[in-house]
Every structure is written in structure tokens, then in C-alpha cells.
Amino acid sequence: MSDLLAQVRSMLESTPDRWTALGRVDASVLARQPKPGEWSALQALQHVVDTEAGVFRARLLAIREGAESFPGFDPDAEGHVDHPEATVAELAERLRPMRAESLAILDTVTHADLGRTSRHAELGVVTMAELLHEWAAHDTNHLVQAERATMQAFIPGAGPWRHYFVDHDVEAPAGTH
Image (cartoon, rainbow, N blue to C red; front, side, top):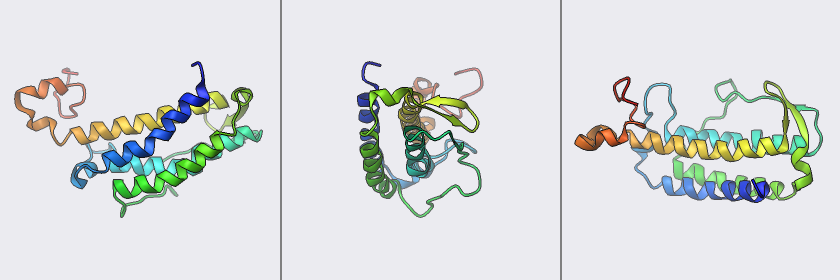
């Protein structure tokens, strides 16, 4: 990437607005799990909010400040914060100031910092550049996950058009993907 810092910043900066737009979708569609064990759009955003300060910002600071290591994160482990009472729109608004603070910290990272390293508890030595790539991909992954989850409310009723959605249809017969 030609300017990793600018590209990551642009992706991370767009996330709250993208979730706000998704928050205008009917709440029952946003809460619908694609299939048992898969996150709904609401659960995906709950996770993004949970990881904002406690995972990504903390890791960025650990690497920037020269910490030898930082812990892993298991979203299913005890202590995972849940927001069952909040809507997607409310969570998107909670994310907005948190993300602004994260972006302000990201703005202190220089190109010289991209090679800095720290040890992830499960993955081993990682660089600042790798963390930034992962953060942007993580945000995008959960937006894609949320969009895919919301599609499930409509795919089964698409009649003869259903086959156009085979790559996203969680109820598609095996072997059709």
C-alpha cells in the first residue's frame, strides 16, 4: 500500500457512518442470526464496539510505546461486554466518539512506527503495520458479516431470483455454493 496510514484511517473513519446507515434497517432484520451460532448484524456491531478501545486502541498503544507483549482477545470468553439493550443505531452512536479518540491516537503514529513490534499472546511477533491492516480488515469484515446477515431475511422469498444469492444463502443446499 502506498500510504498505509492514510488508507487505514479512511477505512476506520468511514465505519461509524456505515453502521449508522445500517441502523435504519428494521430492528428484527438486524437482530436475525443467519443461522445458529452466527452473529446477527446487531451482534457484529456489539463486537466492534467491544473491541474498539479494549483491543485495537490498546494494541496500537502497546506497540507504539514499545510494550514487549499484549494479550489475545477471545470474544466468547467471560468478561466479553454485551449490549443487549442497545439498538444498532444506538451502538453506532456509542462507537462514534470512541472511534474519534482512536483516530486521534492513530494520527500520532508515523511511518517510522510501522515496523515497531510487540508479541501477541497467540500469534507471536506482530508489527504495527500488520495490526493496522488487521484493524481495517476487521472493521470491514464485520460490516460484510452484518450485510450478509441482513440478506437472510429476504433471500428465501426471492423466488426464481434466489439462485443469484447462492454465495450468501445460508439455507442453500450443500454443493450449490
